[in-house]
Image (cartoon, rainbow, N blue to C red):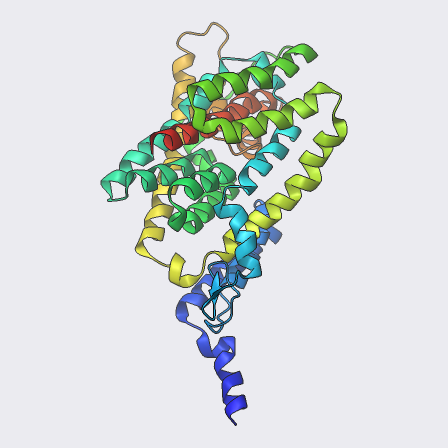
Length: 380
């Protein structure tokens, strides 16, 4: 009878809380959005499944969860805690940046250097939200980690939070990836509100052809300039530009393919799953988490607005006008924001293809958010 009672005590049903049930519903919604709605399935599906895994109740004596590193008085890491270490130590995000660099073509940005300004303008959401978080009582380090959500860059958000506010890593990561997935929902209303029909119909000249030499020199120059301006960005920008140089050099195709496929996929699935598993109800369902989600949404909306308004401002001085819609792509959700720009433009002119033009501020936003993270790391 004692054995039977002990078995009953150790079941998840016996330890289930309302918080666990709420989080499991949230995980199910994430899986639904990934499979049915196809919102960032490569991210939301492993995150959603991780949320389910992280909220299965178990006996505290069992080292199973991502936060379990001690059992029976002796140091004993759970398997999930070892995977989660790749998140908290900041290992996975740079590996993802390496893969992104190996897949990214910076030709559009090289052919239109002024697009860097749009990527920089979109970062206003990061610093604006940092101030807002301070006013709500968060510390400097916590505010910086929350503000970076506005860049709509999951790996950068996770990397910065792991360095400055590891106790908020779960809510920040989930918020960042959620808003990345909801780019097609959040951005179009803002784009239509802040631009006129005439502006949306502006056609831009095709980008110029970029030489191979320019493509090779670009990652080297960006690394040197970015790292000198913000040494804290060296990890992310360095790995991003290494991946791009592997791709553009023409002599390391095998390494570029590995970085952009197998290595990127492995890092993505482990990071996404570990982040989801870190959302245990006792850590996640707090007033702080709700505040982070609200501030993250505010940050993303301000970043989109900043890019749009700065594009309109640039048109005051440009002879060849740019379509201000591409300013919304200044956030670093690559290539989702650029696709949203293309989709909105085609609603008003079926022959107005802005994808390549939007990719310029989009990839500039990736660099911009990494540099912003580097600035925060250097300061705090």
